[in-house]
Length: 361
Image 1 (cartoon, rainbow, N blue to C red):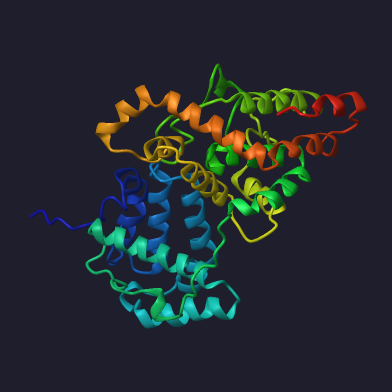
Image 2 (cartoon, helix red, strand yellow):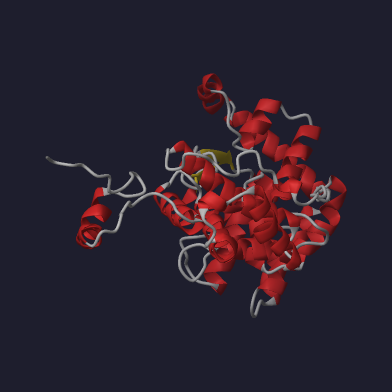
């Protein structure tokens, strides 16, 4: 009589893996060992499966996947890897992960992120029926440590003066990256990936692959923006050479890590690059720009019924809003940035070029 015995669990074990391991499994079974592949015995088994899941899930952003893999490699595997899932509990996470990371000097918010990665892996495995029970269901990191509120890092309109000074003293590509973010309210990721071919005609085109919401976006170019982009193109051709990207690295565009490092060089107070986007939205709102136009400018997700209407009728409203916003920035001193950036950022710049740059906005 044929007797069927379970050999593995899908999707953590696929047919390709099963066939590759079959000779070893048969040898172990012939020796009397019980073999069951695809079920998790330890936290390491769970995290290895979760890492494979992240690699195959292209709907998640590359930066998020990289952060998760980094946390698993640096924190979760060394501290909890040998723990049996049957023994994983609130107390084990508290003592072996949270308290240990605190003693090592890690920030509470980074500890919370590490715990959340572990919780996400357990929750997903339970959803896929790879675990009968999620041992951390209901656990919150605040049970183990108090989390102080995040400091107020907002940029105000009154901060524009110091910000312009920081941009004036920055290297040209650094200043250009954050000037574009301030002028258009774009995200740092989609700005650093900008290519020269995206600036064609009257618009800055942001492909869906570069946008956070995976929706392509077109931003009208004001005369101020056109002058800025044209001047930066001439600077890049003279000092760097012809490149496909506005912010070129050794291969392709600069990395996200480099872009965030650049943001640290212009800080005169604690703020993030995303605060430039928030400041843009706040000023536009205070200027009385229609809410729908403001949301469209920042490429926020809109209800399905409004998308076609917005795409077909609000381009003129976006151009008018950006034109007024850029004029407002100039009235606050934005035009003083460019004449200082050019000679300080270029090599061997002559007096003729310096004079020609004056008043370029």
